[in-house]
Image (cartoon, rainbow, N blue to C red; front, side, top):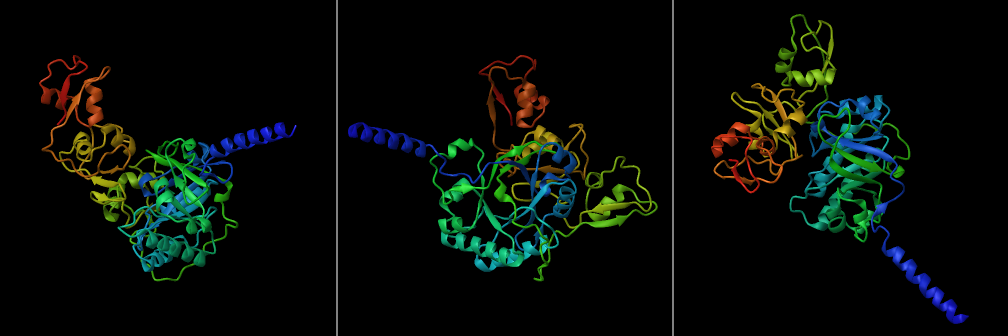
Length: 417
């Protein structure tokens, strides 16, 4: 009897140990019950009614970056998300390389979000470290979060990818602050991956999500109930002296004789931005006395302005979409989809095109002295190859002296550039 009891205990311990070994080393703190997105000015104008109807419940909005950059769409995103009953959170993209800069960035972040009422924990987005050592990175992160807590009396958490959650941020930070992790593979693969955290309360599972009401790609997220603040009161004013590079939007009253194009030129924006922001049905019909919202000093109207992995490109005379796609190593389809272009053969000098990280290999311009070749695979068409590399069918025919575009063969080598 005793032997059977001992044998039974051994089997129980063995089975239990197997079960333990197959639990997540990094797992959600509770059920991932809330569908979310995180957005910035790179999504452009968002129809939050459609977003809400598509099942999204939580939206994290970029508020600021560094010590003087306020996201151009912050106010608009906040107001429209709140108006449509979405839970709202704010995040700051940190660029500090020392503790003093971290404190300044915290002051600036709070000054940007003051007067707003968040529903979710405030977030530090700390991804690039500028050669700073691990100990200093953790000190910078803690300084920022402690200062934000001090100024707002709100809980703060950290956004991080898996690599930094495992190798950069330390356990003392994990003990005090919750984690929102970026991980684009199957969550089951987090089995047996050790990090400074045991649990997370948010997971960003793709940067190529599709949501009704948003033009192009958007980050998709899942959150647990711990994402929410204990109480969602207004952020108090921070009286620190800050001067944001990207200021709030202004309200313009249409004057007799005004046109959208003239207003756009005057304020350094585009007709399309004015149409989107103000939900204008007919760009040729505006009326004296009508109120228009205009983003001032934003990064939107820039000429080839570079953001974090993104640019705004101003079309030049003679440009084609295929040329622009080649230069920035994205597909024509990517530019068309992101900018809602109805006719890819019609773009105009001065038009602004948004180009993001999605589908790119490198945002640096291509060295045109490099020759690129493609080996045809079964099922390929010349048109499909042209779209893939962002060039025209005629260019492929010309480069390769192809007489019949319908006759290509698997194994055939095609010159691209």
